[in-house]
Amino acid sequence: MDAEASPFETSEMLGTFLASTPLPKEAWRVCSTANAMGCGAFVVEQVGGVGYVAFSGIQQLPVPDWDPNRSMLVPLDAASHGPFALLKCHYDGEEPVMVHAGLLHLFLHYHPRPDLQSQIHSLLAETKLIVITGHSIGGSIAFLAALWLLSYLKSIFPPISVLCIGFGSPFLGNKSLSRAILRESWSGSFCNVMSTHDIMPRLSLDHSLVPTPQWQALIRFWYTYMMSPNSINFANLQLTEEDKAWLFYLAVANMERLVHAEEGSGGRSFWPFGNYLFCSEEGAICLDNAVSVNKMMHLMLRIGSPNCITEEHLKYGRYVERLPHQSLKRSFMEGDLSESSYEASLSMALNSMGASRQLSIAPIAKDCLKMTRRMGRSPNLKAANLSIKLSKIAPYNLEIQWYKACCDDSNEQRGYYDSFKHRGASKREFKINMNRIMLEAFWDGVVRMMDRNELPHDLHKSSKWVTASQVYMLLVEPLDIAEYYRSGMHHKKGHYISNGRARRYEIFDQLWIERVCRKKLGNRRTRYAGSTQDSCFWARVEEAKEWLDKIKRDSKPANRAPLWDRLIEFETYAMKKVEGLEVSTDVVAKNSSFSLWLEGWRASKSQIYPLKDIN
Image 1 (cartoon, rainbow, N blue to C red):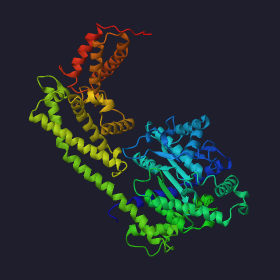
Image 2 (spheres, rainbow, N blue to C red):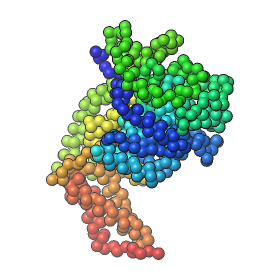
Image 3 (cartoon, rainbow, N blue to C red):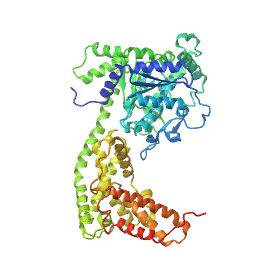
Image 4 (cartoon, helix red, strand yellow):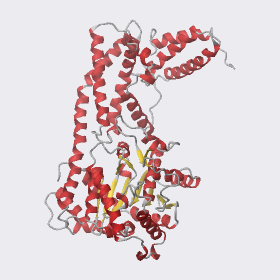
């Protein structure tokens, strides 16, 4: 038995499981129905406890307002109504999440349709699994629909499972889209079934291709077949041998560019995501590593020929029909296998693609499969090393917790925040400040590794890491706020929340919010929290102090009115936290900044009556 599982083996298990279910066959049946209905159609069906949504592969490209001078890839937040809100944000130094402009336009034509929305919501109420599917360009629209639905379902508990199956679908987005999907742990929800020699999934559908007569002739032929597969005559294809060769080698060249693209340079290039199920007459193989997918797409096309471009895009019904039988055949008809289960799985995979008989590419294809194992180890090892470092910084947290307890019990009754803000030059305060800086360095390092995609893509979903980051934020961010105002940075940059908050806290906030969406909160508190549950509470107090000072200094009602409204809003918010015991004892300490502000504010309310109706 192999010592360590690999991404290749994991994706193979997924592919074998998928092939053993009726899902691909049913998905293709619904796709065929949508295709037969013509341009822009969609079909919604329920089969048992599974809902199916299929988009027709017959679509109008280029779209009417597609500007040939405009970039082919556009930011996903170009979708102004926010169906992809969770995928808009990206890490520093990373290109924004971008998708094909024409495909996004097509999806946004479907998205607001009441008939589609109502039928999908009916499926959500009646099923536990929704399969979104499409053939050709319809598959790319299905990918966008699945991304929208997954984003929408994140707020629903328990969530409903979503599976998206594309058949021969072209590239959709860039590397940032692929990374965003991995970070959300959605990769397993996407499967692009593709023929080993189909050129459609290997093309970028850019301005240099779509308007050409060669492409238009091929797409017209495909569309005619997709609408009426039993009445097509291949002799009617208006493509010469030279035209076929031009299209074939254009796809080869496109894949060569992707294969040779350096890591990190693909922000403005298309990039695969999810699982790719490569199908051939001999069998099928599933890959989920984007680099390996690109290499395998390139290698498989190299053993094809221009003559295969016409039919390969139309054979998915045949491949899907054979999938379950090929899975069994692959398991029991292999001979002379290695004693290593891993080497045996590689041999069977190569056999399934017909690559083992192609001496020119067999060694490269095998190395490509092995590469997924090598690439899969590093993030897990780095995560393990981070866990060791996390345990080593635990004393820093404990010392700060001890300092907080001392401040809260002090006779000065100023509390944790104000004690640190007005600290002197004692050795104790110096030590606590150094601990704060050391913890900052560790957590900023974690964020940088996330930025560089060096950690497992689901690390931020781990209860251990989400809890650790939350404990750190609630404990240490008040000290960062105290240091910010102590050093006068608010005079130079503005208030903390808008101008001084570290990015790590924004990320940790989002991770915690996502976790709370999935879990029910506990019972009502019976005592004050160990740490104030809003880590920015003291920054809000500092802003409220400034508003109160301005009201006292400014006698103009027009200037006082908006400040008065903000102060009332903050008082309501703060007292809700205090009454709900969601603050620590330092907030309600007799001489804390909050207690002194509250005393001054209540005194002012009894003396000042701002004019509410100002012309």
